[in-house]
Amino acid sequence: MSEEKDQRKETLEESSVDAPIYPEAVNLENQPPNNTKLGPVAQLAYYKGPLPDPFTFKAYGQVLPDAPDRILRMAEQEQKHRHELEKKLANTDSVGYLRGQLIAFVLTSFLVFLTYDLLKSGQSLQGYLFGGAGLVAIVLAFLRNRYTDRESSPKEKEPPNDP
Image (cartoon, rainbow, N blue to C red; front, side, top):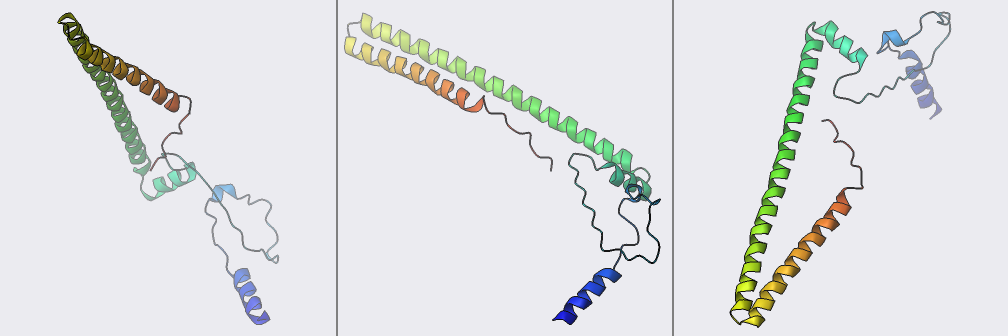
């Protein structure tokens, strides 16, 4: 069992990386003498955004000279596309809201006219039923809108993650 541990330890000591991932990040002035054994070194980098980090961006440019320009152009086109979709969504929402208000106004006007006509013709029970049903529908619509507005507006939503 101890022999396996020694073999693993030797394997770790012998394996080394010839060049670091980001050579600019390594300080070459304070290197130890050649007879000093170094242990394994790990480097962890995290970057989030629509574009690659500067080191990777530079590496793309070294592999393919026009790659950084193409990557920037692609990111700009994606942003333009996203803005257009958000604008269409906002316009669609406002048109739908206005359409709903118009339909509600027409239906309410019809119910008021029908109620007035029924009451005028002497059919008071039917008139009161239509008038009461219309009033209840209007009150419920206002309460429902107020409840959904309170539910969605105070919370700040996080922006969507970039794919």
